[in-house]
Length: 163
Image 1 (cartoon, one colour):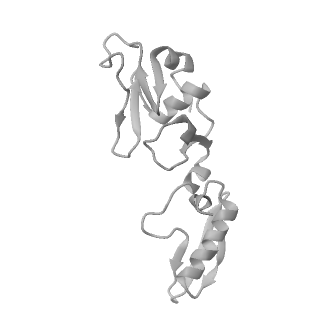
Image 2 (image 1 turned 90 degrees about the horizontal axis):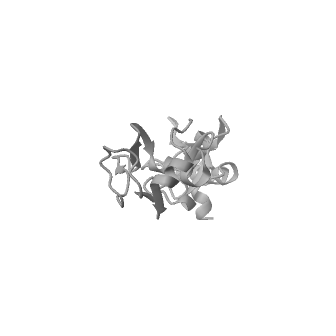
């Protein structure tokens, strides 16, 4: 995605502090922002968003452009999985596949399912392919196989923080 704002524009009109951008120069005469204001609003998704020249941006995108000059080819990942933490040290370039690796399942264990026979199936997706890891007697065995494969195949796995 091509950015409409430039690094030059952002550095001229905003200052960066602790994951946020603050107005140092109004960029439009009728802008509701004032010098010193923090830009953006907290979206229900937990991400900060901002509108510049009528275009909506994720604040993480603006912080990235502020420091790197342009958006990465694929996307930006929040290393700590907190979409509200836009500190430059928490942002890293990624594609959709590696971004999906840096998530934690909500309630259900990802890649581990009970079969109709009562056994447990373990599988994992990596590099656009699904890998069958085996069928196990217990859920714990299936989880152990899935975790071992995740550590081996997923660059951004949250399990690497625990290993």
